[in-house]
Length: 622
Image 1 (cartoon, rainbow, N blue to C red):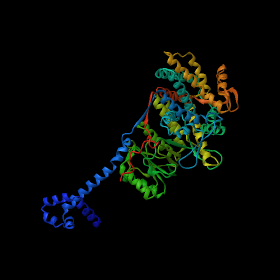
Image 2: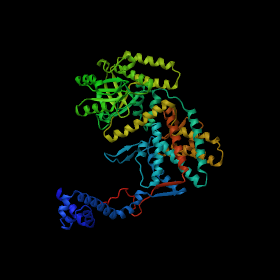
Image 3: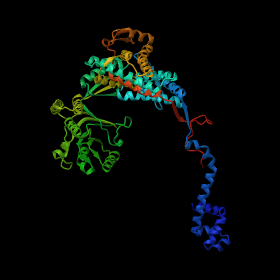
């Protein structure tokens, strides 16, 4: 190292000889310099060494900057990225192209005879699905203008999926239909803002009509019909979901898991789910599913904050002696205590997890007491005079299994006695009767469902992982649709609800001609779902829609599976009102805004390379 150090300094001695001569003279080293004893100068005089190092740094910086100045100039668009702008009909047409391609891919899955879509995965085998939102999420276009249109329509599907859990394909098809008609009207010279107002007027009128047509869902058979339609006509899935809901209750929790056989199985376990997950990902026991699962754990329940490990040491020792996992449900845990627990878990093999208390305020106390009743434990709280150091290990609850994810936790088969659980349920029912607040009633009903309903598990069977995943997607859709039907009721299915609701638009008047055209756009768009279902089944959609509109009986519809006109309610072809409503509202909201677009701004392409804009980090720096 010293040899290299002195060689570099000696080399730069000659590079900066004039400066060194002046430097030596100013330091009274002129005689030494005159003798040209350069090595002696460099080795013995620290000031000259420092001076040379400074010259080295300056010289290197100067050379690198000069050499790369041209490179910096060439890459200036990366630092000051250029933009491309399109205006008017040109930008709307480009967005429409992306929207059309995405909608065409999603539309193939609609109806009982809809087809599957195969999606390439970045890892693992390709995914086969009939779930509209899954198809939409996997679509990206290289053309940025097309991609903007596709992403906006994709947001419709995502929003509908978040609100209703189903109806994503219908929402996508409606968005495309409204935007396509809107583009034509704007090109003809109509005001896009008035078009949007007309579209919103029509949507509000249809939503009110749907609510008036909605009927509450009653009985196992109706639930089975809703689930079957949502699962693309799979009657087995419909029966499984109806059976589970009948046993765990309409507000009960149902989860979907991979089975180990070729056939689907259901399992009902007494348990409770609450919306709090682990406080640290280091508690995960299954890296694949990112969940923490414990068999036969102990539960420490408290509404206090754990500030140090000494507070809970005797509980940890008790759990270690019995070789049982410990789950702590507390208000919070300090960083030092959390770090100690994580370290012991990783290095010492301590089976532990920490979860925050569910709920807020008085509702938190109530939910903690519910968990205590279910698990046979006691909540450590100052209200009953319990402290960590005074509490005995008898306050610990237990259960057969705990499953903790990032967002929620499930307690299965708690050790609480049936008598205490029934007593708690009766207490909640009395509170429900006495309550006058809608918010309190809602929270009490949630608590009642958690204590009473338990957890239903559908174990999905199949010959391959690809098949199991495809069925799981449909079951999730069916579950969401069933819950939506319980929440807001049902209407006739097969796209007929929107078709018949559009009759109210005949008498709806906008304040000007442009708004009236907006109303007509929605009137034509709501026919598309019914047309698409018929076309996917091999029939002429326009003929089917025309015949249905001629009928006086609004319970009649087209059974695309069998190709006949039937009474939809009697046949069991029904849709949840919430799914239909949310699909229309979300589609109209985004599509009408897209219609008002007059300019689009995207990042410019590099014409020389024919690709996207260059990376902001030049690659040829030395």
